[in-house]
Amino acid sequence: MATERRHDIDWLRVIAIGLLLIYHIAIVFQPWAVFIGFIRSSESLNGLWKPMSMLNVWRIPLLFFVSGMGVYFAMRKRNWKELVVERSRRILIPFLFGMVAIVPLHFLIFQSYYHLPSSYYAHPAHLWFLGNIAAYVLILLPLFYYLKKIEGGSFKHKIASYMGNPFGPLSISVFFILEILLVKPKTFELYAQTWHGFFLGILAFFFGFLFVYSGKSFWLTMLKWRWLYLGLATALYIVRLMVFELKSPGYLMAIESNCWIFAAFGFGYKYLNRPSVALRYLSQAAYPVYIIHMLALYAAAMFILPLELPVMMKFILIILITFAVCFIIYEFIIRRIDIIRPFFGLKRK
Image 1 (tube, rainbow, N blue to C red):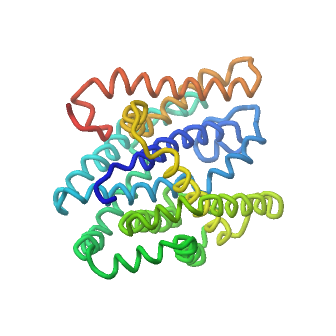
Image 2 (cartoon, one colour):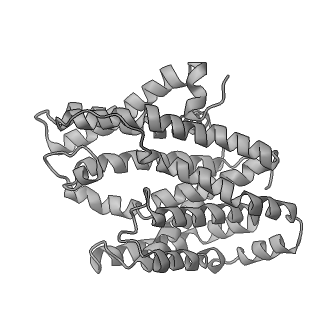
Image 3 (cartoon, rainbow, N blue to C red):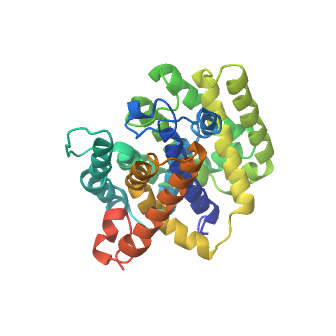
């Protein structure tokens, strides 16, 4: 288990980033979009927000879990210095480059659309996620390498045993509930550039590492009990929708979030853990697409929103154009021009 390539984790990363793009496009059609810096459609699609509200409690935490898992796999053949260099190349360089060269461009599109004075400045915007990951690596690296050092000892066996029952993984929700009680975020789903997002992210990042570290027992638990986790997540979402009008107490959202994620791990492990040509391509493309997607989204919105079309058609067209532009830029520029590949987290050829 320690040496095999986990294709399901790669697929979950790809799927999560794809859902992120659709989620961001859905924001364009919400009446409050402009207040968080998005171009807003004059016609709303309020019905979109019910399925989006199901996504928004677990889409970002899932990426943090998967990123922690990725560090475990990266450590297998690297000492701590090599890992710092590799993660800096993979995360820090694209983060800094994106702040000064990508984010300001979609800010300029926003300013142009609303006839605001043009101003250019460095800002993390949607790339805040990369800054958090870079910080987590540095903060948790000593602990991770200590755990690696004692990997053959009793601690790992105890963790593996604990993760072998369905309530073992579920019990980590206690830490996420404590985060909610201590940080007291106004909105659970507001992760970007908040202390809530930072502390929730470092918890997910750490436990993602610990899950893979614990070995196969965790994955067998996910596989065996995936329907339980899916049922719990669905029930908690229905309660959030029907009882709390999507504003459940934070402790319920924390449990719901983890249940969705565990269900994703279980179904992914069963159906997605196999190589494919599509995965090889998409796993390389996902990171650059994440970096440039807001630029493509804003450009598509500026072009499509003024047209006299049904609002649902506008939503579909913006999705299609955003994905198409992202993959055209990736395929014909980022992927093929060797000198710019490192700025998007890719190795030079």
